[in-house]
Length: 219
Image 1 (cartoon, rainbow, N blue to C red):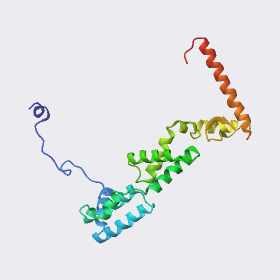
Image 2: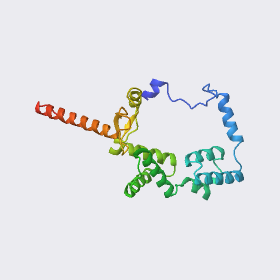
Image 3: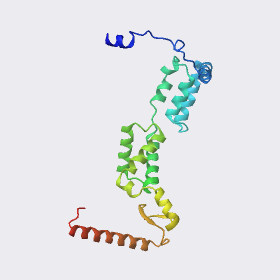
Image 4: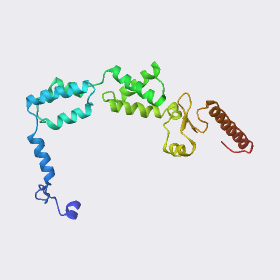
């Protein structure tokens, strides 16, 4: 009763027209277009098989295929109860293709091929995450997972700061294992000089840490 007293009692539901709502012409056009250009039952079956084949051949991802199909098909179509539609909904890439995508991600991010155990583990993670039916999702999942690992941190891509500094000091440097050294190609391609610079920086850090420890500083 309080709410009724405060807000004038129960309100009857009103139509959009009664509320003064007017739909813009663009929305009307889109709705009419979709209604008037839906596929017939025969066309839906043929189009669905074409879409499914494109997904199976790797020319179209599952999500885009479903969106395209559902936008052009009557919601009451018998196609949605067909085996072809079920196969599209439950599509998964062949395991060898998924593993190839994972292997490519290792090569791109770690500059090496994965071991058998690494490949098995990443495939299992991707399977559990439900991303093995879309090559783009699988590629993004693998790349982001690799980037969070210690090796991914070591072999991280060159960032904007490094590229800016490269204009002064030379191109950023990776070592023979593909690790981002944080150095620049000041010494050309003389790997011994870069190794010496690494050792010098490590020695300096060790000296500084020891000195601070003797002074009672906490690391």
